[in-house]
Structure formats: structure tokens, C-alpha cells
Length: 119
Image (cartoon, rainbow, N blue to C red; front, side, top):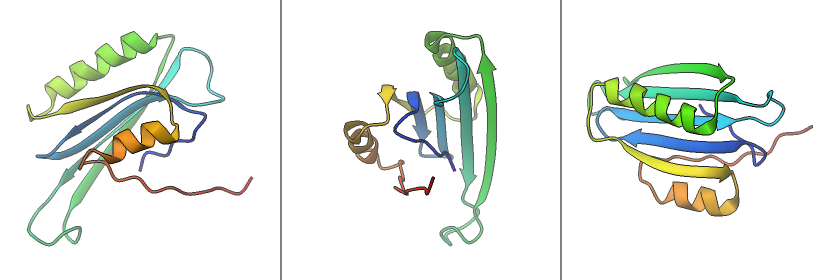
């Protein structure tokens, strides 16, 4: 699961239908300047039983001393190397505001769960 707060600066999300793919690059509040988090997930549907036999694989990393543009180009290279061509980018380049969340929810691949955390 990719967990973001309204204090995180999101560069982009990348999504695809087949295989089910989701990726995100963001700068988390409190991280050093020019430090970016990257997380992506591939979800394989083994059969018609939704979620019962699905196989999820998550990868994550951190890039340091990079600009948002450099991170964006690197992520496009990563996505281009994956075994599908039907991916699309949901460019954000903003903090995670209500307007941004509405844009994300408009995409059928995005599943957002709003939670609150106790301090």
C-alpha cells in the first residue's frame, strides 16, 4: 500500500490495466531535500476469483540528490521496461489536496482509502 499525507509532494502516479500496475513517486515531508520515494506494485490475477488467488509484488526505493524532473524520467524508464505497453501517467506535481484526490479517483485503477492517524 502506498501511504501518502497532505504534506507529501506527489510527482506522478503510473497505472496499467493488464497486468494490474500502480506506481508512485513522491517527496515525503521530513525527508531531506532532493530525496524522493518510489513505490510500485504488480498484481497478477491468477483466476476469476477476485483477490482470493491474486499475487501482489511490491517494490520500493529512495532516490537522493535528484530533481523532480530526473526522478520522473527515471520512473518512465522503469515503466517502459515492464512487460506491458498500455500504461498511462497521472501527473500530479502537487501536494495531495482534495482536488488531486478527486482527479485520482476519476481513474478506474485508483483505489483510495482515506484514513486518519492519531498523533
